[in-house]
Length: 162
Image 1 (cartoon, helix red, strand yellow):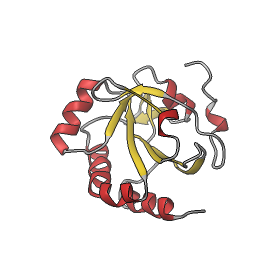
Image 2 (cartoon, helix red, strand yellow; image 1 turned 30 degrees about the vertical axis):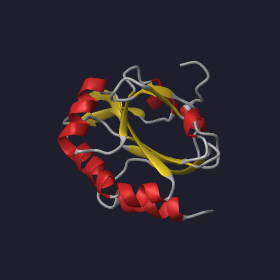
Image 3 (spheres, helix red, strand yellow; image 1 turned 90 degrees about the horizontal axis):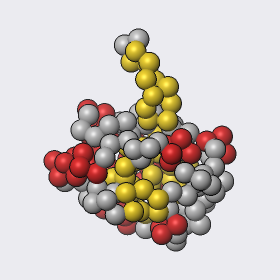
């Protein structure tokens, strides 16, 4: 992924790393194409797992409120398009899920991390959300997201015009 910023550069007020990733229909979605809209870019570890399902369903349940602010919601995981299609269908998710199978975008946003579960180390996505403003700048960053109440946190930032 040429031209992507390094993760250390992703801070509030900086330009969001551009990306172009396939969605669940394998259509490419780019940040550039969303200029003029606020973007809720949420990275999550895996389709159809307990925390990721709760987070995605909470965003689904807040979808109308979020889109009323002029924002677009995009989920990103390392899963492929078919997995995303099944996840969207199973939970009636009204937004696109993007496949970062080569980890370039996750690395650019600094969310691809060495994780530790039950003493086993592995690389994966750290649950994180980036809110990108209409000009393509990072408006807010939530790292190591706690799922409960997160949709409300997102709404608060989107409603804040500052």
